[in-house]
Picture 1 (tube, rainbow, N blue to C red):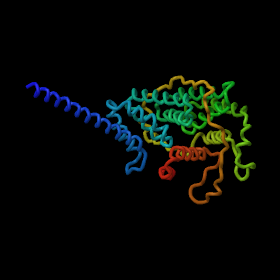
Picture 2: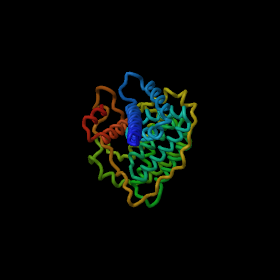
Picture 3: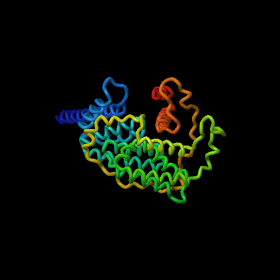
Length: 340
């Protein structure tokens, strides 16, 4: 009798373990499915991007109760690992924030944490992509313009610190300038004077900056047929041209425009006050470079016209190509597929 009871107890024990394994397996399978859906959004599909985003947001919203942390983690990693899809993910977050304000606040906290951690760990490209994404969330009515401008001002403050390497100061200005193509139009329409003050501060910095490295980094000794421009000077010229064009550019896809009637009703979040971490002797910063170019529009008579050297589209295209090659250079086939 005791043996039978013991056997039955063992059967209950193993049955319970089997059920737990099935639950774990089902949860893991669901997490992997959600991750695949988020990673692949915006890729080739028979449906429009807008309908795909609406469908995916509905799926994620229904699964927040069980997979909230997983969804937050994936959504905060994707725009850093796949910066070319920045505006797709900002639209997704904007739609989720419009439906669930608390989730939007949690997500902003996640992104702020990622941005600060990347700065502390000297992951400069990741930090710049995180900043770009925070800026694009302004376009989706997730983050307020005032709090973003405060962050950009704090970064320019870091560029004006004394007794720190110039490469550190240069990077902070580069990070701010390279973010403006995404959010410049929104800031121009809503906070024009604050944006102009920011640009004046940057111009003062650039005018005082030394460029002893320029001649040693030049690819050719002459500027014909293509100028050998220092990277910050070139980007500043491109930003000035963008400002002359009232911050209108033609390269960045902006799927959130299709959802403006929904997003404009959403409540916004304020970024916390973010101060860049102080310089430490162990920090290594990106080195300066000279913009290397071999072609201009006269070399490409067929097909779309190659943007001019000082058009912001030229910077955006080169930035896009650079991020793809940097991310996929170990896998030639994947790299070629993404470049196409």
